[in-house]
Image (cartoon, rainbow over all chains, first blue to last red):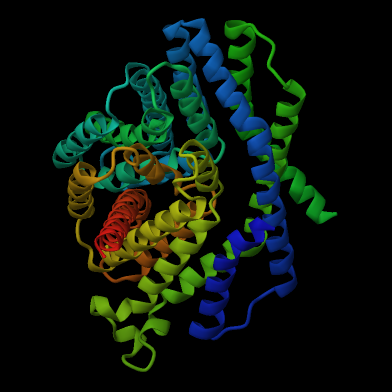
Length: 232
Length: 271
């Protein structure tokens, strides 16, 4: 029943604002309770499956790759995982379509269905490529044991510099695209992969070296999307 | 009956999301690693539970919380609600930013509560507790991340209302992160950086995006297309600051307690 406790704050917030601030009754109370029940049940199953399926496979693959000792396959795997999980991400598809509307309204591309579609697709692949690249870089960092904060701060500096050169309309989307790429299934997998990898390489601390893959995956899309906005 | 069809549509949607991941994992497992997966059956059942859980979760959100949340975001940003009694709604041209206090409060509350329920944050918190040997509590991490998101989103709504350029906030945020990184315990830094990315997924993005777009379309002089974006960026930057602050506070408290204990011991020995 942990899930019920996790959900309680949302229910309290919504009920408070609806009843006290807006002073309106809750519509469809029956459906609301039913839906909340589903959410609680779903969250319970998710956590259960996480510990049974996603965490073990992520870690066992990390161990297997470390034992095999072939760095190229590992990097290739990381890239595929990053790219494959991002390119089909619904939140990303929605954001890239919005972005194409902005670009068309701002006059950056011709305002036709076709050019907007190709712009949106281009953006989507750009973000997916950048997440693949991030996963690869993140894995490489774990192997080498580089300090994470130096790379991230370097990335921030690139973001800041690009901000001054990128077209104004794209900046908001670029910043947002960092956050939307990491989905609910990617996050546990990448975390397990990173920690498993750090745990199986001698001299790496899972706490210091294992985390950080997600940080890369939310940083590189900003850089790539701004670059995309400057080129297209 | 209708519920069942709806469930199968959501379920099919989740399966399509998971297929590329499954193909990559099992492809590499079979063709590159070429070893049998230990506990294959258990892992497959785990995958099934994850898909089932996510489908139920999404369907429940879509049924209950999202429509209401979107409706509320819409109502709260409505000028006739905001300026009730003070001004005629139609006469509002540019209200002072402080008139939007309900919005900031709602943004804070919804940011906090959706982050607590975010499944990917829960996953990372479970791992962090496991790896740190319990030094980082699941709830300590979740609450500090949720506070970060809450502050981030309310600041983000303030930005939409005032129309200030987003990069000022983000760049200042980066500078704060850099300074904090320098003073924080080294163990927490990677986890803190990660927590920025995990906060915004299934639960938070739809509600927060609705709030941002609703607000941008109603505040005079804001463009929905340009100003509606950016809330997610705030929600991914501020958790980093919050987690680093959490680490610094717990380090400070730990140090003070140690000092106190030392003092007590000294007194005991002397007296």
